[in-house]
Length: 392
Image (cartoon, rainbow, N blue to C red; front, side):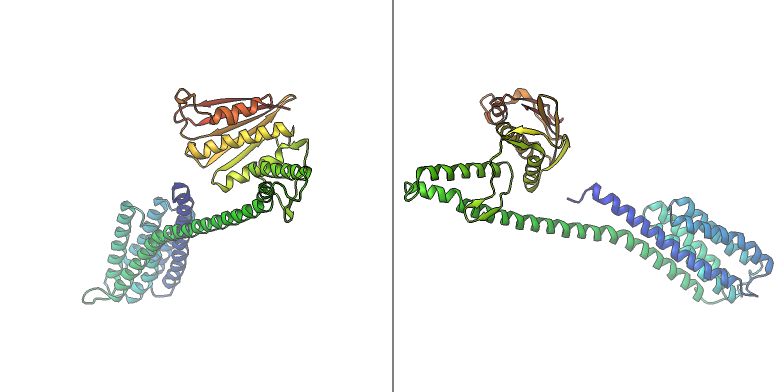
């Protein structure tokens, strides 16, 4: 979904692009204008010297606009640029100085660069129109007398229009391009997830075919040709395999019907928690782990602990209305605790039907069988927290 979290960084990059474009175009045009004004005969020396501080102020405003598009720098730049035009016109008010009018054109191009950052709001667009009208009038005053608008005036008008269109195009096209990129990325993620799901389905089918279904086939034929002890041993291997799959593990086949399974009395909690995290990640629930990384637990206690934890995460995935959950693991000398929290819809504990056995049996009952306990905290709109405890 395209939301505020996606828009904000794109908007910042768009604004940065607009600011830098205005600065580059403005500085380039202003440098050309200064060179034109410096040509002998365009301006009297007194007028030329009077424009130099104003050129410096315009340069400063353009540099600042590349960093911060505050309206203050826009107004300062336009004011200094228009002041240059006014100062240059004072000794040349007879409309016959074609060289001066031509020198004014690149200067107005520098002023037009501010239009790139003036397309966002109505207030800024008003400043844009005022800058366009003022620069156009001043250039027309200096231009040689003609019927209608002079060539210099047409050039100034076209320059402002191009700068305005550039600003509008950048403002509109960058977010649109970002949305398309996001849509392509989302489609790619969906396709990849579908491919991974299909690969897992095929692997699961092969796994069951090589193990559980083979054992059931032998049982259906009364174990013909196989001793009872061999059947018990194979069924035990299948049970351990199913346990690992239920906890989110992915056993690697060594050969047809043989998988890498080891019977252990104690397991490291941290390594199996990662399997649970990956399992729910594949189902769309992002689980963040906090606290203790490695804790040793007896095999039966670990089974109960992880299965209860997985049941709590499944409840988050199905009922909380969120896509992320947090699991905090802590331990002391006697107890290992897991706190599962989500920021979902929550519920009123009084509304739970006592006849429902999901949490009672799958979580509380499973932990009590190994000497553990579970506590549930929730309220409507405030999320849910479950605390699981098992002995070491």
